[in-house]
Amino acid sequence: MKKKYILGFVVFILGCQNANHQSLDRKITVNPSLKLSYSIIGSEEKPALAVIGNLISSVSLKEVLIKEQFDFARIECDKLNEFKPYAYLKVKDEKRKTNTFQSDFLLKICPEDDANSEHCVKNIEDFRNRIKTNLSCEVVFGGMTKSKIIISNRFKIDKNQILNAEEYALE
Image (cartoon, rainbow, N blue to C red; front, side, top):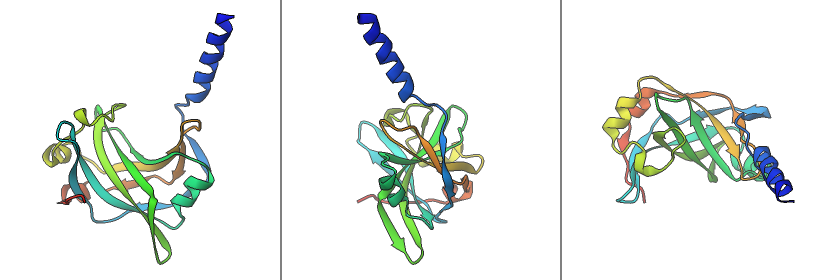
């Protein structure tokens, strides 16, 4: 009997794990804003540097997130050596401007699979030193019980945008 519970639990866990991203039927075209800024986020004990920007789309990412019942939205970029740039995408605070939608993002560079601020890049000089090429990124939605799904085209964040980012004080 105990083996059946263990086997059932293992099958359940394996069913929840999906390393491969699925894709939305129709990709949403997104573009990052031209101007980026940066700020230190986190606590005094665990500070991390975040590059702040906007992602612009012609479709409401908030509506897709809610309609498809996803729990999170983020930007995932290609790996930089042992570090991986990723961004928390604030689609629930999305703003509509004429025919576009803008969502803020906070981009951090942390060791791959370790979003703990303790090990993330902590200053702008180190951040800039790690950015040797343009970042190739895409928007990913996911949830606790849903597989991650790629919802956007691949887009680039130009390294010069990051190199020229200005300091910004978060409210």
